[in-house]
Every structure is written in structure tokens, then in C-alpha cells.
Image (cartoon, rainbow, N blue to C red; front, side, top):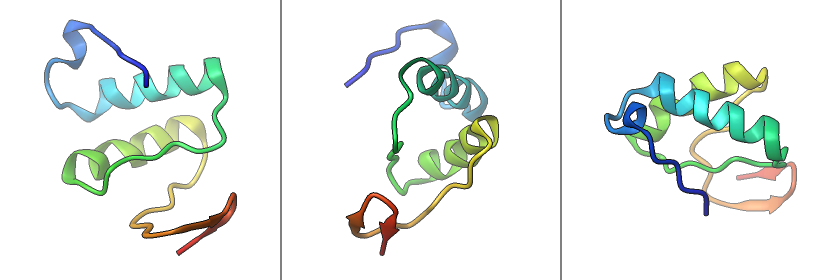
Length: 70
């Protein structure tokens, strides 16, 4: 679990959160980034994916392997 405390994240705006995900991913290089299937998550994930130059995989109910999602 990572904690980020800054005034920029006090409001649920997608752009600062996407930039945070981008910077954390560039530093730690995670294989997967998981987000809740809520309006907040669905707002942030496409923006973060665009910054990372990857395609988001959405509405997953099961992970069977590192690249196999249901």
C-alpha cells in the first residue's frame, strides 16, 4: 500500500491521480495496476493508461494468469 499526501489529491480529479499512477509506475515498474470498477476508477484508468502508453483491461471478475482475464 502506498500513501500520497498532497493538496493536488484532495479532490477526485482524474488528471492528478493519473499523473500520480504514471510517476509511481515509472519508479517501481509494476506488472499490473488494479483499480476498483467505480466511476472514480473508470475515470482515472484510461488517463493513466494513456500516459503509460498501454491499453486498460476493464470490468475483470477473475484473473486466471498474468495475461488471462475473465
